Length: 85
Image (cartoon, rainbow, N blue to C red; front, side, top):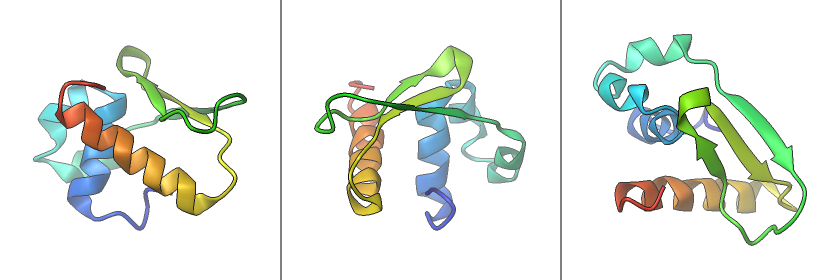
């Protein structure tokens, strides 16, 4: 899902999952070494993806489409910028 994102958006996605990635956002080459575990969870498809930064783990509800997944992921990343993530 994040492959087609631009470098900045991809960096923000990794920062959403790993607090160390915030420092690496300026060194986007390092992101190729990051491994993020993604858990697909059942439940509320209106909820935003959640991240556990210490474990580099992201939990994402099983959305009905890629379009909704992309929108919700970008919304979660944006909320992190406001201190909500």
